[in-house]
Image (cartoon, rainbow, N blue to C red):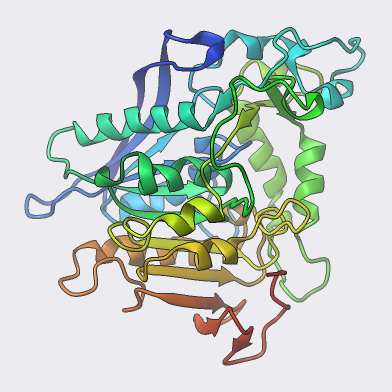
Amino acid sequence: MHFTSEDIAVNHKSNLDANNGAVIQLFVRWFKPDLPPSRPRQPVLMVHGRSSPGLVSFDLEYDAGEGRYSWARELAEDGFDVFVMDLQGMGRSTRPVQMNDPCNINPLQQHLLLPREPCAARYPKQLTNSASDWAELGTVVNWILGQPDMPPKVDLIGYSAGAYAVGPFAMTVDPAKVASILLLAPIFAVTGPSTPPALPVSSPCPVYGFPMHILHKAGLRKSWDSEVDVEPRYPGQRDDAHGIIDVVWDAFLANDQLGRTWGPGVSRFRNGFWWGWNQERVTADHTNLGEKVPVLIVYGQKDVTANNTALNFSVPELYRSIQGRHKLMYRLDGTGHLVVWERQRTWLHKLSRKWLRSARHPNRPYNVDGNTTGTFVVPWEGDPVEMDYASGRTDQPLAAPLEPM
């Protein structure tokens, strides 16, 4: 289906301590399909994670190798109104002036900008927080639903730490405006904080005593390498033959005009404090997640970011914590946290299309292949296999053992 795209600046009154009350602009890219008059519009809003802006994560304009990378364009071509946003301090949205000062970088990263001398943060505290993310997400949701011919609810997609915004928004902040949520590689801190501290937070200093981090190309490569199999078990997991790391990194720099001039070229991202997305809060919800708001979870078998024992992050634990029965979880074999740029992204695209297409099913809205509950494995080759995550059983041998539960 043919579609057009438009870049929009949505005004928002900031509630950050750094620029409280200022009217800032939230970047949104709208992919608008040319629908026949009989087909109603279905808006889908995609929310990025901690370090990768919206366009880098969801609209990488590169089609070599195994086919299209842009998840947003795949969905738009299927007839969905797709919106990709940047939260404040990310990508093409307003960045508070504190992010223009190299002294406000994580002190453990300042050596990346040598030969400049290290300096103390001039804004010695975290920048964003859960309340600011929820407010900004709410502003964009309201703007979308206010467009002509839009329904009263939006489907939300949250990638990685985007789950901290999308999950609580659908659970407690404004669930009446959410049709469903799809969480990709969601960060779920099982024992994370339930309520906010006094904001902004400045201690412990190595964690919260500064407003921003930076990502550099060597760091991206090192992190990605840790989840790419060096053995031939998953050939072509990452398309190194076509230099995909260079393509992704160029997209990062294209979304940070100032950061690209610092040192070797870096991508700035905000330092935030998040709460309200843990086992205690999710288990206490018996009304929305998995009930009024269907949930689809997708993650990679090699993902050691969203499944991190030391930080008590666990995707399967999120699935178990959701009390409603309308919940699905798919584990993609042979891929990691950066699945949006790996071979198994084709299954991610396929699962999301099935999920969203079924929204108006008369008996089972929001299903995948007729399923509205359960856990599945997508093998490297072949179709999904239902799996009992509680016991670890499966219908066929797995390519690799499950992540720690």
